[in-house]
Amino acid sequence: MQRLTFTLALIKPDVYANPKHHETILNLIKKEKFVIAKDTVTSWSKGQAKEFYREHDGKFFQQRLVEFMSSGEFHALVLAHKTDDAILKWRGMLGMTKCYKSREFDRRSIRALYGLSDTRNAGHGSDSVESFENEVKLLFPSWDYKEWTVLK
Image (cartoon, rainbow, N blue to C red; front, side):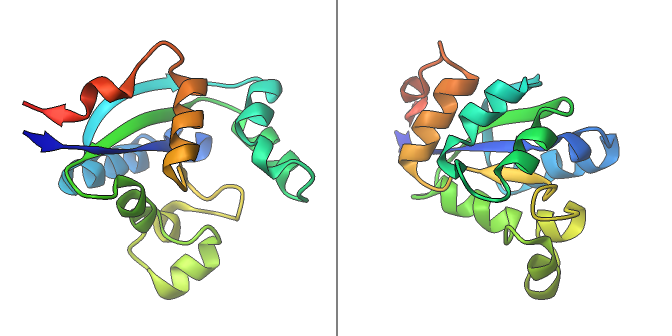
């Protein structure tokens, strides 16, 4: 039996709206041997986006992030991997939050290739197991990821 680790990945609205970029990212996910345990294409109201990003309450960029993430459909995925840390692996693929830094230091990262700004940075990844557990409940409230913890 093989244990899996999990992360939440969001492909943000501007990248999801570009089928070629979206498909390329999905292919990168498969190439890195992630399993898509659960996914949905969805959109948020401003209230839902604000709830998701509540950890950023009071920060100067929160309102821009809420506006952007409620501007159109995005792809939400629960990614599973046989590594010790799917969160670290996915965030490594994303690159630095600030796209200009990704372009300078990690040119092949998703954010370097497809990100436009700190807000429109192509994707999101949980930053901890606790964040993942909170975030997955908001997007998939009736789904229990723990049923996926072991491959048979």
